[in-house]
Length: 451
Image (cartoon, rainbow, N blue to C red; front, side, top):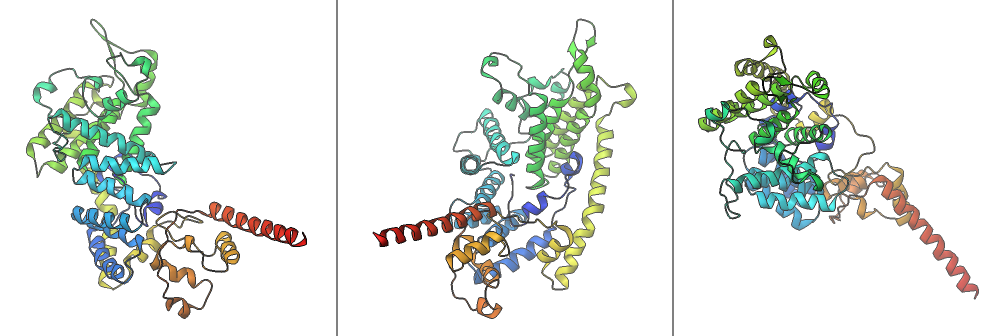
């Protein structure tokens, strides 16, 4: 995440996970630019009527960010933090926005807040902190001071030239995201080793987390795609170089069969980064292409000649995957355009047509349903609308309507906003404690009255 978080994120998270290459080209369920422009216009009107609605802050900020208005997104999230501090979605979004704005130390500040305040966290939240630290280290290596926080050049790991291509480069010789994590996770007793490596489990965990970051941020995030390429390069089976031949241990022979495509996926990621940056920086695009060439040249030596790929082969495959993406997304984007022209609420239409329904789910961006046993119990115990269950003012009418006539709910002037991450289990505990306290109070009252 760079993990964006609004009222759809949890539902999108439940959509079946895609393949690596689909995520790298952005072939997964998401909205069109038309949707985000529509949502800004529609939600700004609702926000003017309900300025205490925190859900609207998240939604508008994400749409600002995805339409190129990242600074406006940051201002909106800061305003939300002042209104109600400590929300999970606020910290997640601010970390993402500040990375996009190249304010790495600010991004790290909010990413760390997530780690300290919320547990357990998704893997992508934990690895986001590692990734920000890596970006800061790369910027420092290139001469950036703390005041020069925006100094990130591409490729992040540094330029890759033809001279580099001519050398035999092992993964532990490249100062990339893989080697950064390998050093970070190195055990204290192994700190003197010059060539640290991630375990298989660590590599797989990191790849999964970073793919999730890409999926839930911006699908054209070049520096994130580069980091994923670095990790797949680390999964490639590396040979032991003897005096006159290449040899493999028995374990490496087994790894070769399991990871024969890792080098190609790494090259795929680097060529995708080259493709995305080509219109803005031909120099950076050339460096990414050289990096992909090096991967294919030096990390396919366990394959038969007819099974090896070059950058042309991978480019053809990349074009095929982009074509598949367009075939999947264009009907969805066209549907959203049609809904706008027909005057529908396309957020509701999108949810009904594409998003799974989550039973009994609640978090800081969701209104807790009034039909749960816990919410009814609390209503009875307190003999009023339990404020700590009301997520924001825009949703309060829906909650009130569960206990009174619809017209009376609409006319309610109580706009108080109290936001909580309380879940159903916690709600039941609170209700039971309240009942026990009431019972204990009655017992004590009767006893002292007799005395």
